[in-house]
Length: 233
Length: 233
Image (cartoon, rainbow over all chains, first blue to last red; front, side, top):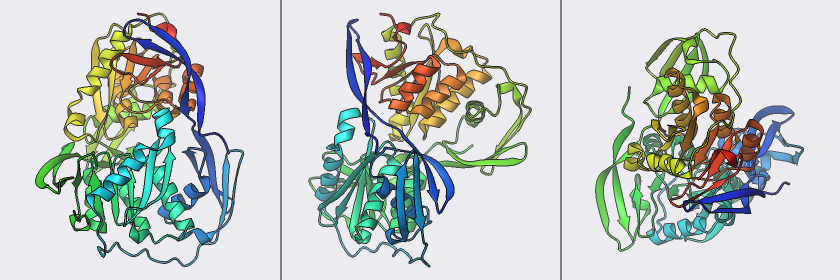
């Protein structure tokens, strides 16, 4: 596995005309060919770590597998991610129910966790996605150059760990367009939050899919776009 | 053409337990099927404005056309963008030369311009890409839900306007991975800057392609990753 961060020479120019030369850390783009059962599926750019979690989450959210157990083998080398998958008949993901509530403070706790994401803090070039339990427990935090991949990794981790994703919430750093909400819907995660903005189509899908969508999570407040009954002070 | 911004009901929850209900503006996702000479090429999500600029820039950066004049007709309706293109034998884009320099202040001026981008300021859900001349003149500013599309729109505008893109710089709001640098390289734009971070592969391509890459443009400073000789106090 490659390093996720590398050092490059930089010239920092100040408005006073000063020039400082130093080495700074930047995000590494991992380029992979995803091969499923011998068939090249797609070329992808993924931060080169947690690739097993990414693969499971990505294939699951795309509807290619219905669980982590269907991945019979996983191999990553030389820019190829090769898996053998034995798709089962598939189990329907339960549509999210509102049998639990969380406090705004638990959601703020998720946002604080992603703000602490180590690689983001080193480079400014990562997105982060965190899974928390509905009691606010920190379960897993994943970073990636892509917000889509970060959420795929978190979902993949949940599937591999055989978590009940219906009793988790995902908090992430990027915007909330439809394709991000679709991942939460595919995984049956009932609450998706972000420090950033949603789109109209993201909100519309959250309403259809029974997902509580939360945007602009700031230190003192947050915006709720759908199913606010899951959030109780 | 659809509106780029729409209003949605929001519940804002404060940490003091307060709840405020109001309507807020969010970004609209435009979904289109791009059809070239009758062939459906790809499904795309684009903010629904400046679609002609987007189409020209997108097809140009993908190598499908070599200039705006090759688009013989353009039609956008019912979620379809249909163009007729008559590809010419193609002209090579000149590799960027360093026959001009800009000051750090001109680059800061570009960053200030994207910070003023109106739709971003209304919704927090847009990226912006600005084209400036090498004398610091503000040429064009485009916004889009996607940083890729925003740069495609700016490049498309430059092609339609028959600008000499070799004497422009592009300043944008999103990160600088390889695929963003590749657009500048395709268009022959010699300086690409962002308020955000580059990746290792973005820097490597900038070095190969002769592009001055600038990241983390802040009020008082910026980081230069390649060809610093184009920036002179």
